[in-house]
Image 1 (cartoon, rainbow, N blue to C red):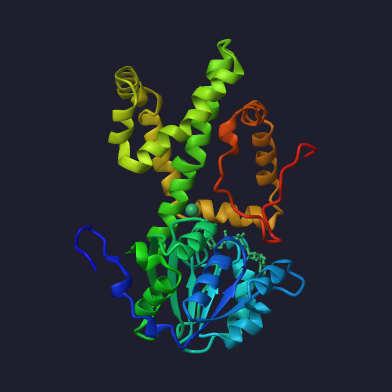
Image 2 (cartoon, rainbow, N blue to C red; image 1 turned 180 degrees about the horizontal axis):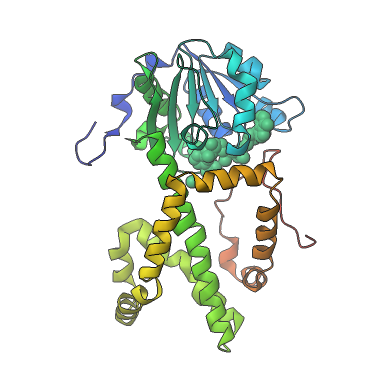
Length: 354
Ligand code: NAD
Ligand code: MG
């Protein structure tokens, strides 16, 4: 452990593999996270059973990878640790299916806190409830492990029935490669609320609106859609890569003085105090459960609003322009770090006919 940060960070030496060596882990789901956790655990010498529904096409993938496969309920009955890696929206139903198989002292293990934090899953008092959440998509969790590298992750303990929940979670984190890179301790509440806020306000929601409004402003003023696409969408990656490597400083150092002065003086006029107030409102809806209730109800209703919004986004002109331009340029042929689509419950694709 290091005191370099405010939060505790754990590495391989802090984890005791004997906490998991003789245990069996049921990995429920074989999608992005599931395939990576299952294979990494297996190669770390932990007994793994992948839990998938009869008829799930992920079964073939898991078997081809040399793993034992059973139904979620059968897998859970064999397991000491049940790692819940099906999509968040189906976790409550899968939990109902397997809950009777959780014995006292077993562990429910998550990679995201939504269902526990918002009370959609209410575990019995005699089980440990932990989280190891890699801060990366599953295919990188797998690739990094294979390369001998690690993937940073978060650790949280929601319920410690055995007194060993944290040590066991650390051993799980070690077995999937996270403690090679560093594991930061947090809580289910903090992980869930910061994750939702980040994706809504900044990462997915905020940035896509910023790009679209920038694009529309240029096109509405008579500039060509191609130029608007390059300036507002394509160059985003170059800027974000610089921030990723060296923070805002590396970005400002790399752009021209003109860009730096213009950005420093104009940026705060665009994302102004109204944006700050809006972010506070979005955070409040995350904290008071309003967003969670809305999303749960949306799923129960068959996702009508979600579908509609996905179609509208797909039909935005910038998507057509981008598709054409990406085909014309060599950079689109670089190896893309996208998800392998090997699971049967992939997001429904929005097609042009929608
Ligand atoms: P995913 O959508 O990639 O995988 C879904 C898997 O669950 C598939 O194998 C599918 O066959 C299976 N499945 C779907 N419905 C099922 C059902 N009713 N019964 C049994 N199996 C079913 O999911 P994911 O993105 O790996 O997410 C899993 C968890 O990991 C979530 O809690 C998510 O928040 C968390 N997480 C994801 C990422 C990421 O980058 N994808 C990162 C960190 C944490
Ligand atoms: Mg996230």
